[in-house]
Image (cartoon, rainbow over all chains, first blue to last red; front, side, top):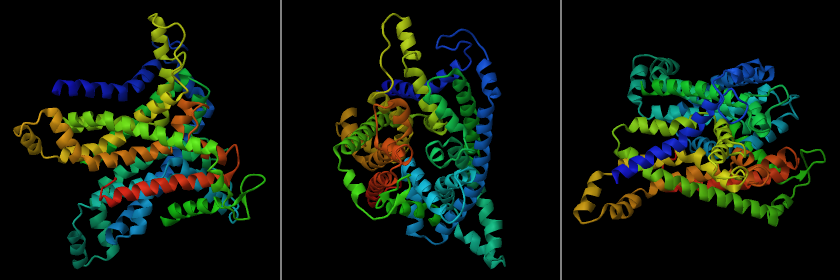
Length: 252
Length: 259
């Protein structure tokens, strides 16, 4: 039975990892077709020479960095507030945003922006994408930071207050350093969900805010394209490296 | 916080009660027409199809995850095994679906290899059907089932299994009469965590199902973009949101940590 389980586990791991490995392998294929014709970097060169593609990657980076900075700040403060004073409403809305299907979050935000535009003369664009990304990644940040706060001893903060620190000082010099690894991990998480999102982004994006996932989606819709294999491999490697870094930070 | 999360949902609820505007957007008067349209056989069918595919994907995920979890819990390198499950989950979802398109399409790897081996003459229709969507969902959401299951299996006291064995239970008896009943909370949590995102899926059905497999997520997206019937799209969203909420509360009543 034990050997059967091990074989089974290998099969499941193959199911999980082989598709991406095969995709990566074929991104180095010289041929345009699914037959192996020899090693080549031509699809990587083609991808990096594509101006629209590079522009959408830059857009994605700008959006992900701004959204991460905002969401990490708001999410950390929300987690801290929940730890100090539990609020069913706040906790409920956090969990709700984690379980709400993406498409529903997307259309809600779109409806919200259209409603707000009646008062503000804005259009859909980079800023609405950033705001939308903040809205859906806050919950992820808060959950990661809350997990770390559960192991934090409130007596430490009380001790700082007894020793003459004001509340802000105690937060900044005692609580914040303790939370730091969780905050860094949460920021990485927010960054990866932001840079990867297609469903919500495509609904709230304007004409000037094409992101990398949107470009990838448009290409995938048109069918398989060897350049897309190269792009996918690069994205997977960059995201994978970031996740490994985040894991390292969280376990340290 | 509440602003970013609660207001958009409220607006969607309000929109679902309004009339469709001539150029998209919404207009008064208030109406319940949008919810009546949900009773249309066409939409009811799409809705049941979404429920059915999500339920099938959930059952498959749990069925596949359970033996894997048993393996991980007994292995010596638990963390490595778990990370291997989670790692693909953190790489781009879109790209993982695309990887399957690459494998499944008519001139994709599987068909090319089978044809090269002379096993088939015409390519198998692997892509753009319900099966492809189901496969994509299981592939995408398997980690969602593994994590909560692992959390309960790990806490299981091995002494209980020894006791069962001492009392004469065969390993399979012990599995069905001790391990699985004791893991019921984990199974419930895993079911909800997989079912809810599967029900609202949009990308998987869009890319792997093509125009033949339309699920509720695709209908919502279409109402808000091409069809420009926002109130009806909003009504569908409300129904989906309510379902997610009910399931979440059901889980919380059982006192399970979902995250």
